[in-house]
Length: 473
Ligand code: ADP
Ligand code: MG
Image (cartoon, rainbow, N blue to C red):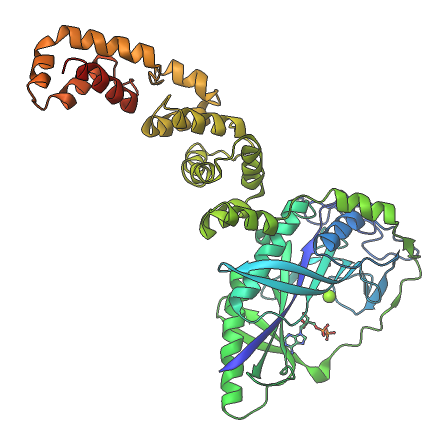
């Protein structure tokens, strides 16, 4: 058995109105090659301008990952030729990434792990290439879109940990609003570095890099496949070669792309068209103060409330749901009851009516009111479920709806006593039976329920009935 070592380089497109260095729109789903400016096409004489919104989103992410922030923002050119990069170089950050030496806490199957972040840097995306049998199509809409690359230290030790990190990172992008981070749109992509070492070795083994994996399940499969391949090589007594391999999701195999000897020299140098920009302490403080409570912190709090790992994950994975829950627990301390309703019937009914928490009229106060109505005996649990569905369907207040549906339990002691007395008055023969020790209590409760259409609070009814009957003993 060898120890598995993994380091990830995660590229994620940032939200912004325009591109990273040009005024062309940063938009998905548009017609190909419509959001393109002369800057993106690398025309002679063009001058890039840094997009403040993209920098702000990068800073937000860097701070969320507890990184050090440089005093000055600066950019380098990474030179290489490829059709998806008309300038002949990518503007990136090589010397002074926007964030360095950070960390992110994740939970791996319920266990806590600290993932060290080497750096996170702002760069531009390339054009999108679609390859066909004897031609390729290029869409320059993506060329120049702000891209944040986050590089971990080689500190992950299993496919589970790698995927948990990716999920955690995506959540941070979603919670901060820095990116939509949709893998189905290729907005989050990952290079995976894998090596093996003997359990007691002190030096890392030789790594293999697998480039541009689009889905988290692809990352998991790629790691498993590559670990198996390297294990076999080492078991044969051979050495793993440092190389870049392509992972094919269809065949579940990796193929050699290039070896270390073919490594590209990118001739990095500072982009002379982009002078350094000072990042003020004031701006950093402002962004830091606006950071929302992070998914991992929320997860930990939920576990402390006694919520199961599964339910806590369900809530945290969906920011809308988590924000909803956070509002609920400002109004009520029934943490566990609320989370049970939320992860159970609320989700079920939202799906049923094809709604999301945000586009439905269902509010945190409605859920809290409904839970309180059950707890105070106004309605029973079964009615609560029915009522919840109607509340989600109609968006009406639970109290109003319960009245309309004639659901409210009779929970007023005086009212129940009146009904009990009238039922006993009409059935003195049963009172006689009770006095003679016959088992008629349940039957009388049944009569009272019938009398009230099942609305009398059962516990209160039993208590009062016993009080009144015992007066005859
Ligand atoms: P380069 O500068 O050649 O791109 P880096 O040292 O910056 O290489 O590492 C790139 C990525 O590879 C990082 O995510 C890092 O954690 C990972 N990595 C480096 N060495 C190893 C290794 N021996 N095994 C697994 N991953 C590694
Ligand atoms: Mg890179």
